[in-house]
Image (cartoon, rainbow, N blue to C red; front, side):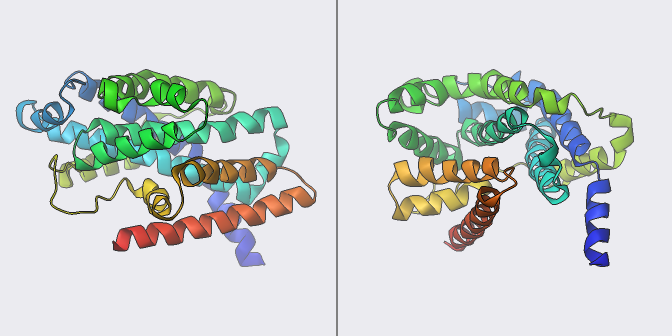
Length: 283
């Protein structure tokens, strides 16, 4: 029990929220640099051209990629810390709901970045996302027009949502929570150094537009969903399945029996998704 308490105290002592914000700041700054060189009309060629024609283009693109990944990963760890320390019990339902609602938009921010590359992975991810949206009864076409519309508009809608739409919605939903944190970049030199060194050593992924392989793996966080799409129709696997997880996270705040059931369901959901992701990685 003492070891468990000691681990919880150490885990809580790490300022995960600040790490998340610092990663976000770096992602936004490098995103502006990358956006100045990006052309939505020719996504693949403008991205590959950035690596060849722009001074340190590969470095800036890699730094944007890894800092964005860091933002999402630290967000997940920060959420885990909230659950471990049960600080969510101190939040009202009205404040807890926007935080849970911000998760899909953080995912969409990261996911749209993959789509905008215009390479084999990005193109396939965009088409899958579009088909999932269109599978929603009655509002599917409207939802697709708001989020992706890759088939009819190329990367134009995705680009607009990536640089403005998704980020603005995420910021509105998280503002009451985020404004409590004060992230001084000077205090996180180690994290910044890590991102800089990683970007110098490893290039951000970029694949040919067409591959001979019959299977194209999507982003790492999308693999479980991509695998589930093989067995279950898009409406159930791509819409209802993720929504049940968000519902489980929301009701975890309940202190009575519904909270315990929601916790158990969320853990089972995560276990199943990890298994599906592992299967997807082995393909």
